[in-house]
Image (cartoon, rainbow over all chains, first blue to last red; front, side, top):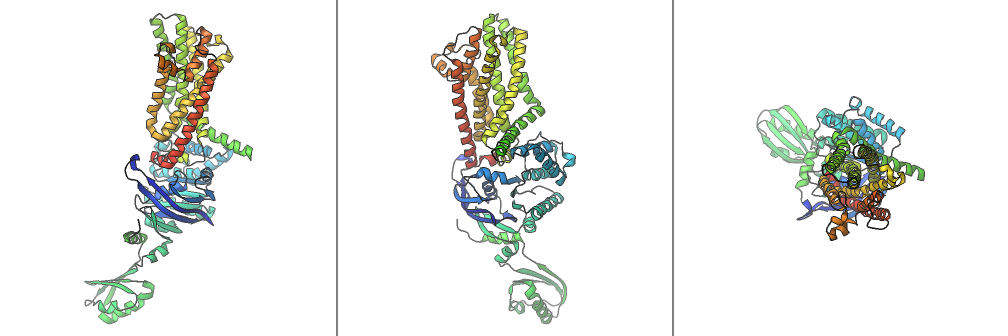
Length: 318
Length: 267
């Protein structure tokens, strides 16, 4: 079941109110399944934050239509705000309010009644291990604790969709990992749909069911991590270190599935379509051909970063 | 269902009152603005009238103006700060992504403004009675309450206008707040009757509800009003300005959502 569907969403800005318009989004079509983790990846200025702002109704689109949780983006924006929540990296709250006061304030803005609100605050404080910071003002919290508070705040209204704009930016690896674990747990146990943006490809791969690559306001590819990797037809790289006489590449390039061969001193780097299908034949050929002693074999699979770099090189319509 | 919705709206309104209450409790500067400056203003103007050997009637005239002005100043500050603090703290987008509307914001912050204004009004009445023998009760409790009600309703017009400016110009709206209040000081007969203004400006003065509320209340201290039914005019103009200011606020919020200002003010 689709929880978000967007069609032809476009948004332009006039930087500083004047000059040539910047086309932040240029006809975005997007569908997100309920209960999934969906990630938007793209360089700075690709339009990720603009798209999240539109889905959370902080920003109205210039063109296009869309629904979030069955509510229309334009005419039912108030209803959407009741069932979604958002937080971003480096989130800010009222600096003089404590953790509990900030949560209480946001709980009130969501119209939560006193007893329910207090219970929820206690649960979130426990869930994000904020007990010792309960009465600490926001401006005295560490970056990691501020981010945990931001996540706690984003769950105050028990949203159906949680939007996270670079939730782990600027955090140390340990805190980032704990936040990723929390997100996975919320998705798995509560069926919470999560839409996040990130620059961190490993994070995207670890968390996401679906990924969309955004560049210059357009989605240039989408799918799960495996699909995306196969889309670029980059292939796997097999790096073999050996002892013995120098190998001639011509014997290897004629094999099926070999995309590229590069031989340097005692090292041969071979790109194949799928290492699982080609490794056995390749090894036999190498050993028979060159009378060599294998020292080390390394298999490198393309990661999302490679995929993104490759996709962004391809021409896309403006 | 209706009751549940009504209750939810009350909680959301209370959210903004809660924020305002916390700001007052935790920010000493806000407390100073609410309590300290009005008293400094009252006492210094009172002492000035003594130094100038102003007659008791004129002292009453001026002090009524000073107290009325303080009520409006406090009311509008409380409303403006609810938004300005969010802009200064870059937290506006978190509030605007919640299912609140401009009415919740206005009502919650205004209620707190009325609370603060009431305290300051009572304290200033007591101080002016003790130090300068101006007795507000002489006019009658009902008249005093009507006068106060007019002032706090008019403070809402100013406060809402500043909030609208904040959604358009961000933190710079503070300048707008100061400017509106300065214009009121100049035009609405706080320290002097409006007939001392050049004729075109005195016409403008009568477009300001504060001018009418002051004429209404001063009429019980021997200053005849220049218009018939000044209280009615005051409330009528206030209602018109409140509708205009609230419509401007709604437009400013919609415009901010269209132009991406909410996200930009939170970066």
